[in-house]
Length: 163
Image 1: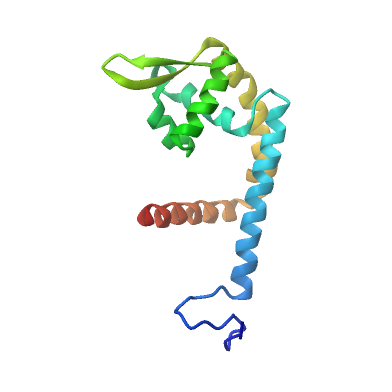
Image 2: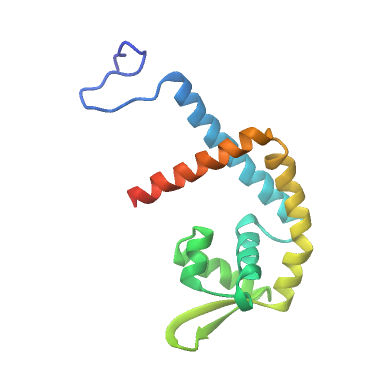
């Protein structure tokens, strides 16, 4: 494809191509988030969990009565309902959560953190926070962390507007 004056591929349409710096930042973002997820996932595997399972346990541990509707939990952990159902079923077999029918809505299902699940998240949380601090919080200058927070909120807002 031919390039325009800025060195980006020329296009007959109105595509606003990324310049070299933007492309590098985008690729850095993809690599960093992938490596971060892989690191935290592997770190939790030593505790018998993966990152997605830990996130489910953490949200349930913070919820009133350690219970959330499956739909609300799916939104919190950013999983499809079918993916969440599969993961919760696996966690249910491990005795970490239980699914119960909603008392006021027979179609609704509640995910409830069991005592074993709560004990596991309480035991695992200090280890996980140490890992998060090591490769994320402490790896970023305090001023840059504030900027990153603004950046992430802007991204979340932009994506929400597109949905």
